[in-house]
Image 1: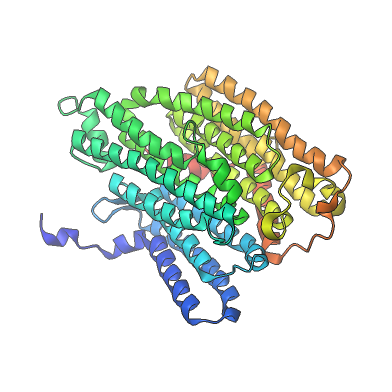
Image 2: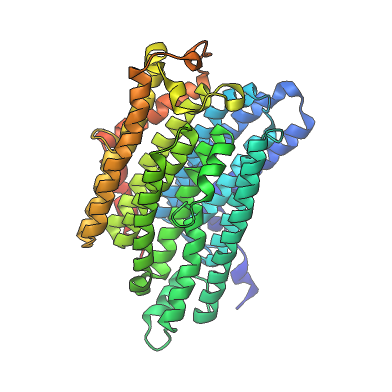
Length: 489
């Protein structure tokens, strides 16, 4: 092949504009951190926010010149753009909700914002990857930055433990993923998703299906760890509890959304022809994830740990949509991940503000009387909790409705029944928080709470508004998700 074919074109760079912007801004923040003084550090958060806004603009520009680029290594379509913008919005909400926390912990340094941008850049690479090697590269970029963010407060032993557990278990899971990629290459002679699908659909060249099923299972282990699906979810409660609250909010939404984007792209595009081989273990993982997440959350007294198990359960609901293996299932998963991101970040933003310095107040009983002393914040948290339950007029309701509808359309009746029963179980521990806020006498934890900063106010109110808009006008997102899902095949 002529060397000229490997030279990137201008359109190739435009298709990768969000990642380029994030990388450049991240490097600039690191440079300014080194040469600037203490007084300039707060401005680095504003620069990071501006970089994320520019990357959102870059995602729209990239969609305008959509298609494959860099020798078919990346693909920019509606599906990739949806997840790019989703993780960028998640990053923006994380930035604005973390400013008060970082000032309070005396840790407002530029490396926090740079690491966040680098992690999001990796997630954008994952969303647009058309090659298994690119999937691995994007996953590692995102993961390495996330490992460091989990232990960002170096003097806090909880942060150190969180980062170490995340790193060790994450590296172990990544080895499974890379081993699965090696198997796919050995069996098909390619790591390009479209080419792998073509080989599997050609009877003359199709490899042994048992071996391909094994390769899919190995890759499933890597993806299941990243989305905290059972039986690879054990890291999530400890890591989310030990990490700084804004980082927990980010890790439970951004990396999970990007991992599901790759999960859907790989299993529906490349492994679509062997769906009968992988559907049973995804089906089983969906059930186990919902049950483990919801029933473990029933006994939690720590709010961050409760939200961690809640995050596990919600990964199970999305796996139901993956198991459906259909366009409506893909669209339902996309919509649910968007709705989940806002209600989860909103809930963690309230915890970020309420926990105070050193995260002293993170128990369920600490919320006693919050409805009386801080009615507006309590009302916002109530909206997020009701959406997590799936109450009508919230994004969580339509998210679950579309997921279970997709499952029924694919004749997954028992999976739908088990999912609905798990939703009923989940209502108990979410409503318990509301009861504590409004029906218990105020305690010491709700006294002398400082004001909500402007950034946190934007994150909380913005997340609440998005949760209600997705519940009242779901078609604003669902229509685009449906059109984008049709491209993933």
